[in-house]
Length: 105
Image 1: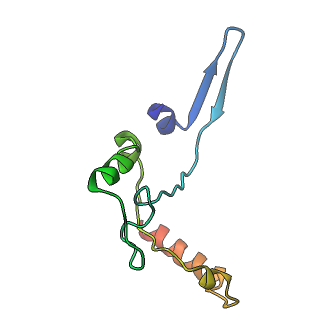
Image 2: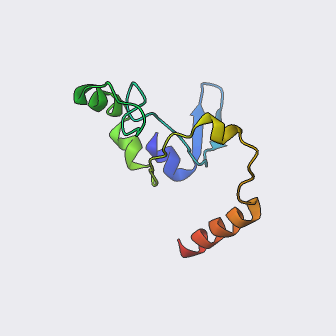
């Protein structure tokens, strides 16, 4: 499977024919920090044991984690902040920052 990611294509072979399909993609994923979702939350207490947290995190395979280039913790956002009418940064400004980061990279 990992070779397919490296090559950027997947070949499916059947008795009558084989098909090669592109496999270039960007994976964006998210997961909770623990089963109860509150590990590291400043407003709620996590009720998971260290062993439960370790078991939860270890469900993601090492080879998959090795291929994730960027990992970051994102704090919980309150619903009232999401539902507010305040406008955020314009997409043009975000685009400029992304382009600058790509040039640096």
